[in-house]
Image (cartoon, rainbow, N blue to C red):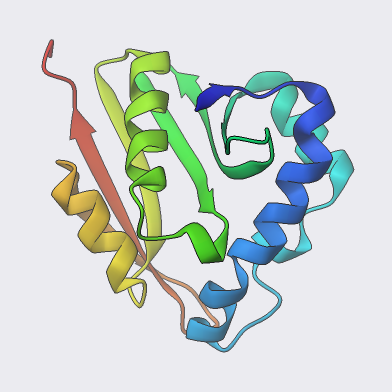
Length: 152
């Protein structure tokens, strides 16, 4: 079940974010990545100008989330997260489809690490294409991907 997240969900979403990004941090051998350092105050600030969705299980527990903000005709999608033990079950795919429907703009953009092969494969499978890579001082390379809506 995918719903619009409410402000009361933010603490649980941040806890899920910390859990979900452990594997990314291990992959990068860097536990100081921004998603693991984000504070509750920063999440509240982001919530004030973004769309947050949540995936809930049968008992109402939050098992996934995604957020996006719209600028001009582009939705910038971020922090697609799924509870580690629920990954690979289509929840991330459903969340991504839901945020695209919620935003209904001409273009969608997201990014991930070049080492996140599973993420890249998921995004490519859902129609996203690479359009830029950006190297960072700590050896991290971000892959930026975009998708245009069918109404373009």
